[in-house]
Length: 127
Image (cartoon, rainbow, N blue to C red; front, side, top):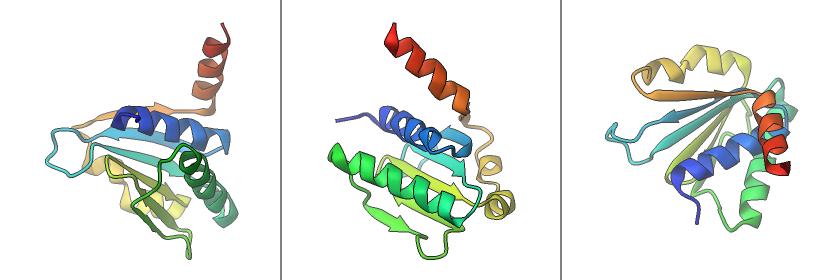
């Protein structure tokens, strides 16, 4: 069983494999929430958002990790996947800019990831 942070990192890696943009983990532990982490990402168009969402869900399901809740798959402006300790938000550009979730939690630790983060980790695991 993955810890909340390990699950969040796994989700980040899966998102980056599908070219998600502006990927972040927000550590919400101690913020009086019922979950520990947000994972945020942006997709370019509806199909990109769908691809990221379905890939994350499918890959985690193969490991026995299934979302408690899945929302937003019909309009694809903001897809939410609830994995209890980790809440995944996949936005289109406009919706992400409008809600700016990062600014609500600017007192929390926020880790930012890029496609280069995935490449470095893969190279490190090959050594």
